[in-house]
Length: 225
Ligand code: BV8
Image (spheres, protein in one colour):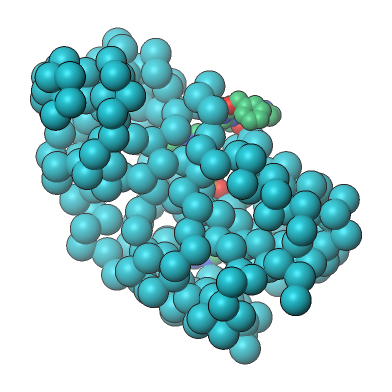
């Protein structure tokens, strides 16, 4: 069976209580992107950035997967080995729902990275700028997330999956952030059927062969069944 590649964004976690980025009361309305999601912002004010991620880490720790996460985990179990979930999200709700094959292209709240030696480890619940790296002991700890201007993770694996996709679905993403927003075109070029499942049309809606609009907890289980 052809591969099914599913790209998810903040909208799939919205009904689990986690903020989206660009909706009316989204995260970016309270924190300017350049201050909290760029290396330059971190260099300017690491305490502010750690505070931003500490809050999101605490919030994510309280969140539970919703019916959309559960439906994707069921789909993966039913078509073992052919369903890949590529998520832009840094929460762990896909895994909490039982999903196995999850690619976190923008990193994970639960991981920390040393800016000095590139060591990665499980993040503490609360991190501070002068936390020493467990490997090199430099006070250069940052969240292991991909900021604007940084190269997303696993891009080669993702390109391989898209090249072999028979079906590509984008769920809960506004299609504003690249290279993720360009995946639909890569999948379509590989001959995949493409479907957008979102609350409202995304910026790349015209690239999709099929669209389904509504809340993820409604439309994703219907689509999976
Ligand atoms: C890079 C950090 C070099 C972690 C984030 C062209 C090609 C390549 C790059 C660029 C390009 N053009 C511009 C760029 C640069 C830049 C970029 O895209 N800028 C944008 C703003 C124009 N991209 C980068 O810098 C990337 N790196 O380019 O490296 C390179 C070059 C070529 C090839 C490869 C690499 C790095 C981008 C990563 C930035 N880091 N986050 C974190 O803090 O979380 S991005 C941030 O936005 C999050 O990761 C988030 O997931 C992501 C995308 O947002 P969405 O998930 O879509 O969330 P949003 O709020 O926008 O939308 C939510 C949607 O859900 C809405 O549509 C809403 O209607 C819907 N919804 C809401 N509720 C529900 C719902 N749907 C269903 N049910 C509901 N209940």
